[in-house]
Image 1 (cartoon, rainbow, N blue to C red):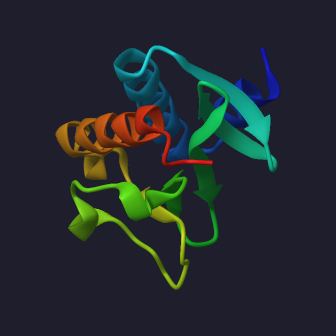
Image 2 (cartoon, rainbow, N blue to C red):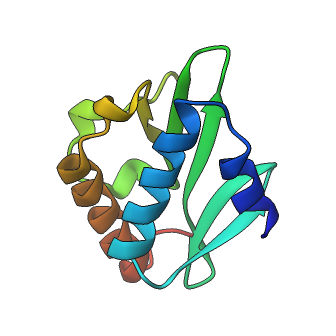
Length: 121
């Protein structure tokens, strides 16, 4: 098992279930992604470029799915959090029930399109 998978498997509930569901959705919808362990968290890369990361914030009680160079994303921006970040946007999940697969898939497909157009450096 690689360090990114260790990170996911070793989380407390509900974070582990959320992360596992996110992993299934990302890897089934964007089959060319590569799961790496960067910055001490699971980080997906697509064609060598940063795609998104999965970060657990146990003190704040959520899983943060951050999208790189999200200024070019165009769907479900109303559901994304910036919290003062200029470049990053993220989706946050406190429980597995919070995870709307339809919204998440739409966002990762949009991010995949942005990645293929070469906006992300």
